[in-house]
Amino acid sequence: MKFAIVLNGCSQTYRSQAEEIYGFLKTSFLTEGEGETFVVCENEKQRDEIIRYAPTALLHLIKMDRYQPEAILHFIEHYEGMKEFRYILFPSDFAGQELSVRLGSRLKGSSMVAVEEIDVLEDGVLCSKLVYGNHLRGYFKLDFPPFCISLQKGGKEPCPIPVIKNRQIFNYEQRSDQDSFIQTYLFKRSEKDEGLESAAFVIIGGYGLGSREAALNLQKKASELDAGFGVTRPVAMNGWMNMGKMVGVSGELVKPKLCLVLGASGSAAFMAGIKKSEFIVAVNQDAKAPIMNQCDVAVIDDYVPVMDALTALINTWQSDFETKRTSE
Amino acid sequence: MKVLTCFKVVPDLTLLTDEDWQVVNNQVDVGFVKNDWNPFDESALEMTLKLSELSESLSGSMELTAVSVGNKKIDSFLKTLLALKFQHAVRIEAEQDLRFNPHQIAAWLAGYVKKSHQDVVVMGVQSGVGDNAQTPLLLAEKLGWPSITQVIGIKPEKNGCLRVTSQMDDGVLEQVIKPPVVLSVGNAPNSFLRVPTLKDKLNYGKKSVEVIIPTDIIVDNTTEAEIHAPKLIKLSAIENQRDSVKIQDGTPSDKATILFNRYLKQRLKKL
Image (cartoon, chains in turn purple, yellow):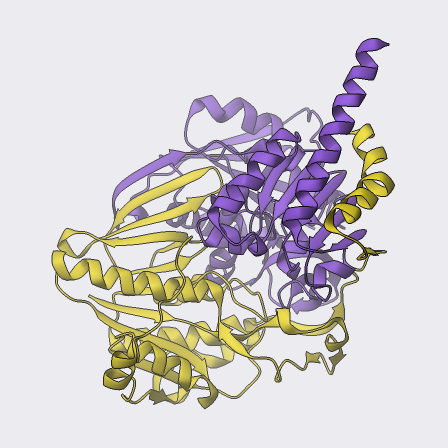
């Protein structure tokens, strides 16, 4: 069953997009040999990395001035072999979401965003995704191919892409004629906070922090304890901490060995961002907050005095631990 | 410049207890919880008001319209927007189940945009309970307009242009664009909707909500919208519960000590 993959090679996240798709392929009924990858790239510098990490042997490299959805859609829509693909897969990032829906509309197919799994049906495809603010899972039937599907963020474990021999590469250049509505274009790359995603110990503050000052204090404490620091959406939306620190379904997904959550009620969208944590501790005054039943240990109290006491205990223990190790 | 801001009123799902999540006939009863602005749409509405204020000194005033789809229960929200000086508040009358049918909503919105000759459409990237994240994108396609997603800022520019800031995965993009365009608003900090003053409520809130019947605006093929919508087969609960040992007795210091000694010390050692 032929399928296509569309990736944004203009982004620094290209490799993670590719590995996310590859992880999805490994658990689906689709087989790599029947897939073709379309990648948009800006310059020659990216070429080697794009080829190395493309999830299929057959690769279409589309050179453009920059990532521009109108131009990409125009190219893919008019690619002559497009009708042969029954499935077109996109990663979970913003580009994957926007391209999947718009391409589905243009090709008169069906589309769905944030899909967890797909299953083949006689006359369509069955997709599952989270609905009702991540409280429920919905199963949907899509009827019209091509099925343009973007993946759910964190839905499947990414899978490293092996070295693929005998690659077939087709090169194209696409001029951005569809960009005429854009008068000026300025992209400022921002450094991603890799520490949060990979940290073994993460401290997260919720709306119960109450102020920007409290959020900054907690961030400082987290740094002293060598922990990654994140916040919930309400904290970021209030501007108490920058958006890069936001944990949840529309922010970072963390999977530390130890996750300490302070002053957060535990909305479903937030819990989706920490559910892969090995051990979750929640501190909250409200015993009925949803998080209190979705953690491993719940401390019912104001987070400030609990955190002060806990920090003192950890510091004392760490210094005793260091002294013991030095004397040995 | 005519700006149309689309919004949805959604149930506050955080108010539902675990026992409330009962699926009956592929539905969950959310009728008893209070409704609120969809957060992304709330940002879109506030950004539209800020845009209009900024444009007054630069390129003249804008004509603002707010639109939503639903029954008369959402009129109080539309009245609030009239009090916030949206010139028009429009409700597209609908009673049917549209939870998972962004195609139908996009078709109606496209009909209204064409009928009322809008230049810019602003709306949230996603809304509950369907979490479809498709409506602005389908709308752009039905209109044949370009679209910018994950918008976090909109400012007026000269010559009828807009300066649009959007959040990409690895940075921030700032573009000056010439409408028409569909702007889909993402996580925009400090964009909570302002509250109207009592004076403005009295002066503007009494204006009527314009109610439109879909058949008056539809320009797209409704059957096509119905056909292409995904079909809900079933809804199922998600199991998120953990053991959840409660520490609730003693002083905060006592609780921290129990937490540290019983649950954290060994784990911290292994980090």
